[in-house]
Image (cartoon, rainbow, N blue to C red; front, side):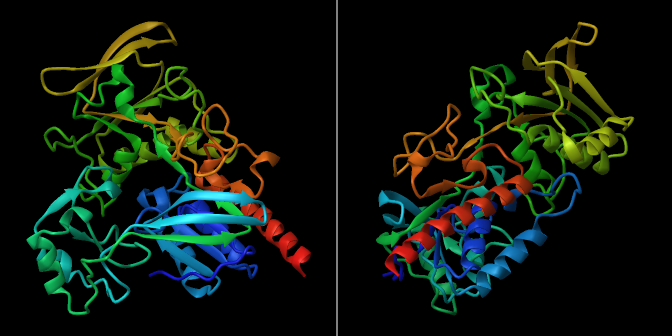
Length: 426
């Protein structure tokens, strides 16, 4: 049974992505006791699934490593993975949180040696790679997973493969009889940092995501570009494995659309400009076409946009693509009207990347506590939420830099609440 020492001066952080890690670390480094709850088997969230950041085109691994080191060194921080908050009751300064812990089937003895993975044969869809590849039934989520501990897929339990994994472990780390647990802990304030999820591209019927293999999303393309990803960093067509040199990006795929997402997701333009570099860096004879309504690259991002626009092999087409069809060779064909000159087009490409927008990871009817949301489902910063504070993309569509800044502010507000509790009890 998992034991946690917590009081009404403990801060609960829900979500272990870049915002949740930031909020938890900032609060813990002020001396507060913090419990960080993450539903995945590892911390890092969607940042851990990125290949590069914009505009510097640097790798997220550096920042992740720093945060992981901070987390390991801080005795005030308790991390629970494969955990979800199922209920939250009370008021600011006096909450009670119920947490469900799913079994990992691997204990703290795990050294990350990989013997269990090599012993099993079963494979399952890899969520980390957005289903583009498979992982073994015993697996390490990714190369920088924190905790650096293997996971046994629940579908393995009761199979001969699970027994093979257990037999292969030299450290008695695999416990196939682990059970789901439920904890109830007190806390004084809550930072809600459950992040975002990519909009379901299958809902945008005219773009054929669920019909054409060579229409993918920007998050899938990001994993494809990563050398540790499902294609080893090769930009290829899912239909036939051929090099994808002629790539089209469709901006605002589902965003700024009353039928899908009302809001602008802010990062999509910059993400496509970044991913344009992936294509032009990979192939000398690359050709990239960006179909856009308008490009939102404000402040420090304008220079990045101008550099991409100056590339000879990049074309910007001002148009909201009407539909995507497919020719006899499996090439996706974009159909629409170029609004600069009002010329109709039917352009074939090797691969089409949909710049899908961001929406909250938690739906409006799934919150375990009464919370005020705006029309898009993001948490409003209002007094009615008491001691529950949104951080990062739980509050709005934000890039990584703004998410970290926002999470730091949320941590400060949570600290102020528990300081008031301490003052009243003192």
